[in-house]
Image (cartoon, rainbow, N blue to C red):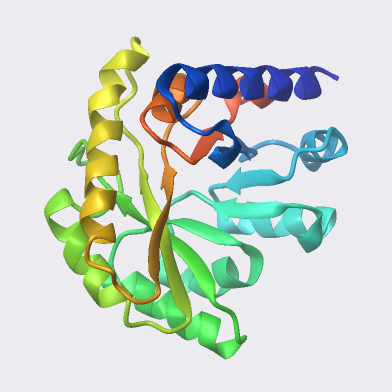
Length: 229
């Protein structure tokens, strides 16, 4: 059960990072990133007691979730979401991490209204201003939060970012700190339908640094399931 032992090791690393920095490890959820992984591997993780999974592609995710069962886990959408796929994201996912425009938030709200759901979302920030990455610019995020909070079928539950990949995870720390600062700025506004509960940041190579800086959701794929085929 390699997957089970990998998950245990990551939980141990999360606890150590939290302890080192005075964070509460019980507030950190490990999301097993299962994109491009067969359902059998996800089932193995479920059998090992793991419950949170992240998927990047709507079509692939729908097929796997239909097979494994909607209630078998908590499902996180962590890929780029197009407005025309919003209805599927709302139907299948507990938390959508990648909302970066008011237009997308509005469409998610409309689809959630149709099925009587309060959809939890995170606002994605392009914290490193990379042209190749999705996410709102830092300068736009507070304004997006102010507009998105008016949608009654959405709950803005925090922020998400994806810093550049660094060989030395320490180099990502400045980006994690900045996301936390933006989160506090939004929190001070006391907006309706909004709570800065979550910081979704940190991946296989840098999640321990993210935990030290206050991450509550870490997205780990390779360190659990192995390198992508």
